[in-house]
Length: 57
Image 1: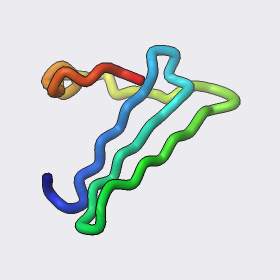
Image 2 (image 1 turned 90 degrees about the vertical axis):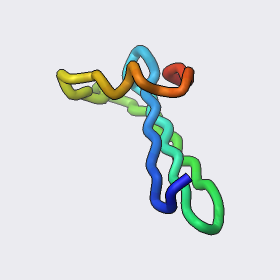
Image 3 (image 1 turned 180 degrees about the vertical axis):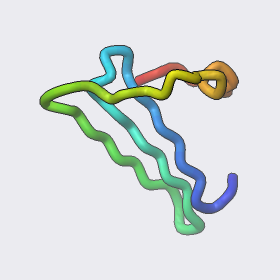
Image 4 (image 1 turned 30 degrees about the vertical axis):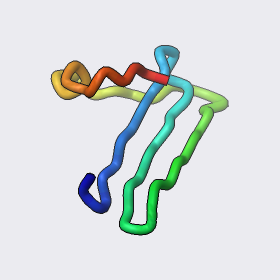
């Protein structure tokens, strides 16, 4: 993996986000649950179909 790589995962209801950040020292995981509203996704989702078999959270 490349240093500084960021991977984002959003669940189907779009109220939870997981972020994985890869650095030289290891992996950092952030998890956020939105109390109000949802995550807005871009209208083009071509990149999401090319994941390595990982599903949304």
